[in-house]
Length: 192
Image (cartoon, rainbow, N blue to C red; front, side, top):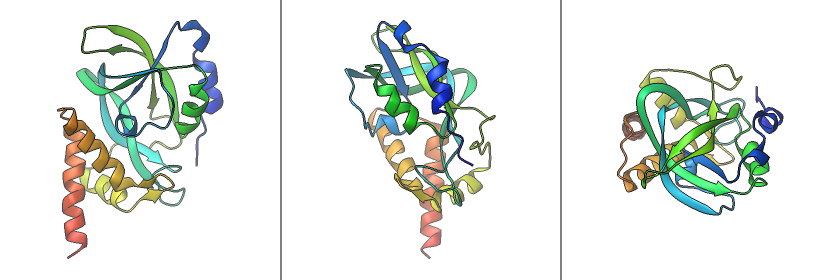
């Protein structure tokens, strides 16, 4: 079931064409960075929102019990907060492996608080990848996240850490906060 996109990603952009390379992180990269970078800044991209619609068979779940992690969906006039990292080309060997379960690199405009805009790359899992789980109601998403865990830890922790990080940056994400609240309620009910 794992859809390894590493080889595809190596063919998507010629990294040598970039004078400087920025990568945009909108999920766990906001609070957990496991690679070297030259610079890191808060930033945002336009036209996208986060959704827990991608399956995680390799980090926050397993083949038998996939977790749910974030991808981006196109939404007109949306703004998605995240972190932008200026990196060396060699870092993409690590990033392509980290995001191999259905994510493809896309070029986007990354907007910084000082009004600078740079071309950068972001990983997005689209509906045509084998690990895509798609839209579901909050109750089903919550139950799946609550019951999933993988080599990178509990799927619940992924949600809680992201929600805390977004609050730290005074960012509101209704979808993330809705899932976080539902998880807390589900946890209380599971312990009764």
